[in-house]
Length: 276
Image 1 (cartoon, one colour):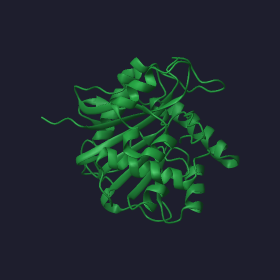
Image 2 (cartoon, rainbow, N blue to C red):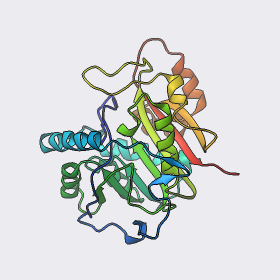
Image 3 (cartoon, rainbow, N blue to C red):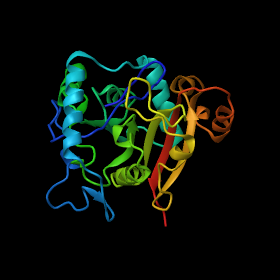
């Protein structure tokens, strides 16, 4: 689940689901965990936070939402230009295996496939995933719990997460734990691309429960003792689509931080397994 409005306001609550459903196009069996796989539901010694009541209510909320609505996105040309620049900036090669966490109806999962990646999406909402399968019959989508994903560890070249509600909490340690958890699904050299949005006010968005974390809070979204991380970089999706990878840089971040007034920005992290 995620948003894709013209101003890139990320206002989604939490990914995950009560089970896994195979997509119309079967999920690649080599990606799925088996009973013999170890460390699938945790990373290191830390269990991920889990609230089944909350997950169930969120699943119901998004199922109702997708029955009558859908998120708005930039046009496909702009989106593909953004994703190409994002992957180049992250060092992800063509034809890479990409996991789209909180995929909603699979818009980004499909765009990744269109630009040559081997993409798989997972989302809490069964209805959202079913709508996605109707729209994108060649794209692999599954309804499942994003905090207990059924995929094998070390299976993906990149994990893409935009507007995931598992980061919509004031518990920074929980956000750190989830980012660390996601790195467990990376192959050697892989990267988690974590994208969110904020105006840095520390308040919740008007008419929503989405938290606009402060910049200092966002800087602590990753535990740099556990992972290697670049970011957060401040930018805008449409800007990156126009000027490419230079739209994701320390120089631009410093410049945008100095601008007066309150604006909603896109925040990007590149997170990798810790190298020793």
